[in-house]
Image: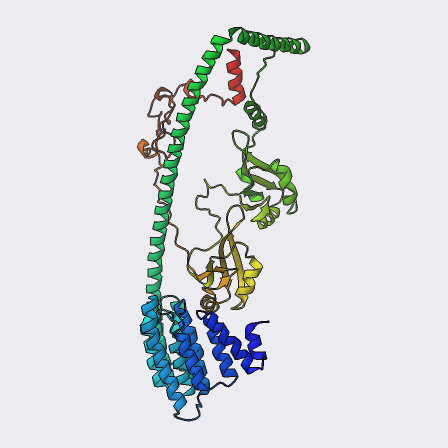
Length: 608
């Protein structure tokens, strides 16, 4: 049975109090036992002097954290509040309650902060309780406002929820003038969710204010939000710079480790080769006859095999005794012999580009065809292979009709062998360099939340159930990596900005499966677009300097292995009238040599 439930159900006073007395005597450092002891004493009508003495014993019990003292003070102050008859203007019990509130604040400031180096009550919960008692039960708004001023001066003025708590108290027991004053101060001071307090101010002025009040509110909110957005942009740029620096350091560390590993491997290989040479020399000196016998038997075996093959086929056959690695390369070369079909850009309308497929996928055409045939008739699936014959993880799917290609785009992010498959339109980027397939906004979206710190086991349905409690959820997206595994991040889109800001206040710091999540308005840092060099393409325009890109691309340190004498220079531009300006190009230079495959090179070597 729950101990708290047993406290309420057991009616034997002596038994209940005896059990609680023994509990606090054996475990005096546990604040929950003292709290239940005080409640049990009040429930069974124990004398006030005895309850006060028990509370003093609890203060001297020696709790292990500062928040324990806040909890025990709250329990005792609630008990004193229940003793007061607020129908009377003044009473002995009310004076005692007010004096105990004062003593509680002094005790927490002097005793607890000195011992734990922290207040234990950063949100001023006890002071808030006192302000509510004065406003709601004693009709003393002047004292309540003094208490809230003290709360704000203790570092709580930057939090929107503190200002809204005070605003709600003024709405219920104060007047419109003080409500307006509180919201104006909130707009200037709030740093966590200024959008929300600005919206509350505009809502109040729209309902109750004059035109002059509305103009003042608009001016203050726009000025404040502009300054906040500027600060956020600077913070985002600074964070992006820090991330870039960290990536550069990580890359540098990776490079250093690779160099050390290569050096270590080189030393190890050199030592192994030296030992191998010494062993071979010793073996040749000790057993020359045995080595000759093995060589002769091997040569005779190869010769006999060649003779048999020659008799059967009537042709000269060359036997290559290859290692397993060479056999694997030979098997992969079968894919190289397959005819390579060039991409036809005129069929882009009926073609989709499929990427992020598993590299280990065997026969991708066979496995993907049933998936895409559900969208329409498939003309061809062209997987792309590397020079070694390995699948590169992407392919082109050509349909018979354009509507089938449009329907195939809905298969984007579909899980294929444990990875999300990316399906995008087939666009020639050389003709459309500005084309980008990007689905999500990177600007400030006040109606969308960014959630981090989620447990990896959290599903979309579980998170949606939590978010629905604070508004209408239009869309929810869990962020995954290229392998489809969750990253603990999510974007939640609400119907309105007010719902999103309310959800931030309620969900930030929430615990989901022992993970404390962080919730904020979606405002990703802007991506820096690299500046493009302008290249002159008009006739007669100078070429780019060679040193800017190097001989083989953008890497300046890469060297060209082609001799200068064989480097082809670009043809001189044709004059407007008459022959070309530069020297004529010979036929042998103009005619390009046909490209040779690995098999062609192998035949050249075998002819020698």
